[in-house]
Length: 277
Ligand code: GLY
Image 1 (cartoon, helix red, strand yellow):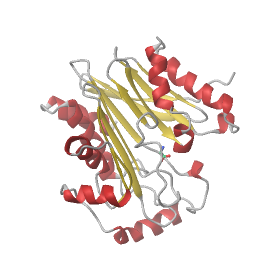
Image 2 (tube, protein in one colour):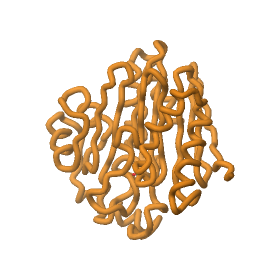
Image 3 (cartoon, rainbow, N blue to C red):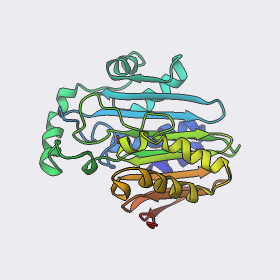
Image 4 (cartoon, rainbow, N blue to C red):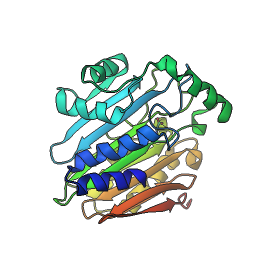
């Protein structure tokens, strides 16, 4: 809700929808309020957060993405710089950090995050625990007054992940997909489960075939659960919006919140786990 409100205010003040996406996600990256976004998010097995983010602009098919990047305060801004100021779509690791620094982005020395690591381990869990216990993500889209779609996504990824692990969030068509003709979809949950199924691309393609966003999100959960050995124990959650502004959300096994804003007002909604067949 904080991100939706900040994005709406940015647009109301004259910013573009893409600016709104960046402003909203930057707020959550700064606050660390999600618990797993930005440098206040969850550290990897070596004790440091490696951050993933992407941004997409529907009308131009512009896209930028960073993966496994250390010590940059606003990965969503790094992703936007990749989109706006490079010939590439995705940069990872040291290269992503170098690029962000070259573009003047705010940074910290990862060794300064040691206190955070200690606090996290004490408070939440051993980083060696399974991925299922430590992940989350922010995905934000905007359908603007012209009917154009924009989206972004940012996460510290799964707590305790191996250094170098990149999740679904910066992978276009996995953690986020925006198709200006049809709609947009986003994912949270264990990224490995999302990537294996190109889940947000498939949700958008289901909407292209006429499904309501709600139907498409549920169908994707069922499709994954039907073929994956873990079935509905898999941890995946999807949200989607179509060109008409209709929204949908579905989760495999847990409740999760999302926020919807319209005309300067926003509300938090809760998604229940899908009904199992
Ligand atoms: N969905 C976030 C991650 O698995 O990294």
